[in-house]
Amino acid sequence: MKRFFHQLGSPKHFYRIAGRWIPWLGLACVLFLLAGLYQGLVVAPTDYQQGDSYRIMFVHVPAAWMSLFIYVVMAAAGAIGLIWHMKLAEVVAIASAPIGASFTFLALVTGSIWGKPMWGAWWVWDARLTSELILLFLYLGVIALHNAVEDKRTAARATSILAIVGVVNIPIIHYSVEWWNTLHQGPTVTKFDAPSIDMRMLIPLLLMAVAFKLFYATVLLMRARVEVLERERNTRWVRELVSQS
Amino acid sequence: MRATRKKRLYLVLLMVVGIGVAVGFALNAFNQNLMFFYSPSEVAAGKAPAAHAFRLGGLVTEGSVQRQANGLTVRFDVTDNAKTVTVEYTGILPDLFREGQGIVAHGQLRSDGVFVADEVLAKHDENYMPPEVAKALEEAHEEGKASMPPGKTTP
Amino acid sequence: MNLNEFLHMGGYAAYVWSSYGLAAVVLAANVLAPMRQRRRLLRRLAQRERRARRNP
Image (cartoon, rainbow over all chains, first blue to last red; front, side, top):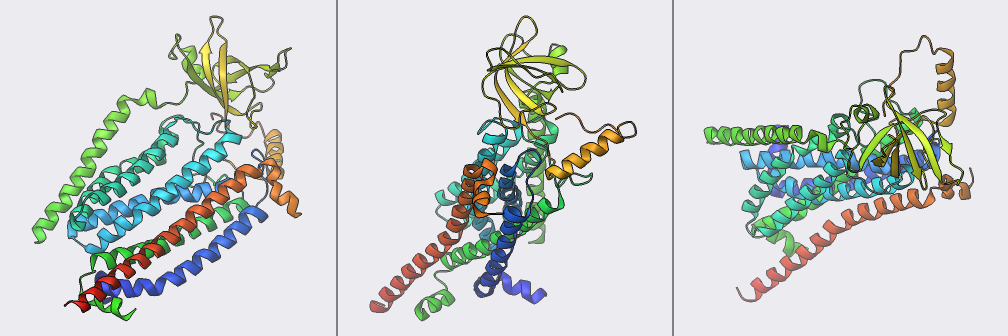
């Protein structure tokens, strides 16, 4: 086990191992996605209040969960990179940013599309929506900062600090619907008393959540591989790999 | 080497705690600005601005919705189960608008105490279920009303 | 359930399908971007390798 992690820390082995995992993770993701879509669009019953419009939830909610989850992973990886100077952690942090930004964007836009027919407005400046929009700007800031700094190591350090600073926004997003009154409704699945969602609606929600997690894992490895190649372009193993192809 | 790592770890932790505390203070200071709407109780207590527009949030009182003669203007009561404010609104209501539903209205208080709204948004709850289940729940609630604990009624 | 009813989504077709469509586009873009970047990078590195071999 220890040897496995040691190998994963070496860019050459990471590149090889990640290459082997990507197809399997991708396949698992597609299977969960198909199951989730079938359960969510066909099996799940119509909602008593919102009719069929609530089916937007099966993309909106997992995307919003991912936007928070990926940010925490990015900040944690950034912190590990800062403290232990682990190159692979820096790679994971920077490879996470564009994926997190896309899920945040997806959560915001699908939320807007859901809000129009149900609330009667595309957008309102309540605490939940505003803090989620700030999250998008944090992701974009991380990406922009990384692109602005020429040296990869310096860039990684600067973006890690920005990512760690932004972590305070995560509990604010999560608790915004409880700390302040908002137009956005409170949590359904993570509240402590009995879950207030029908089982046939909860199953596709969880299936989609797993599918999105697998999607993140797959794309993270794909992005991390490219980043590793770029960073190691002057090493012997990359030059050999290039001449062979 | 170990000592420098430890130092960096503490620096990162210090940064997170420091920013957390600073943001916490800032949010606390701007608490009222972060509230999306005022409740009828706050309006009754005079906390809502009288001179300019604000948002009012609460539940539409059962049986209070009245369409005016012109067919477009609606009058209804908004309550938080303590105080009630009457709202007058001309325009299209969202699909979810109905009695017992949570709403957020934007507008201004008139001198007679009626809240004249220029926008009404529906606030839905966090419960999702098929209509059959909702109906069954309601019937069970009607039957056991005396013995049931009061449910969460604020939106 | 028939197909028409399914596509109609109880009158919310435009909202539901545009959400799912957007999700499909965002996910696809996320898969294609690193594939394109990898191809480009490998091509660039291969060019550099060839140049290095020609004038060592």
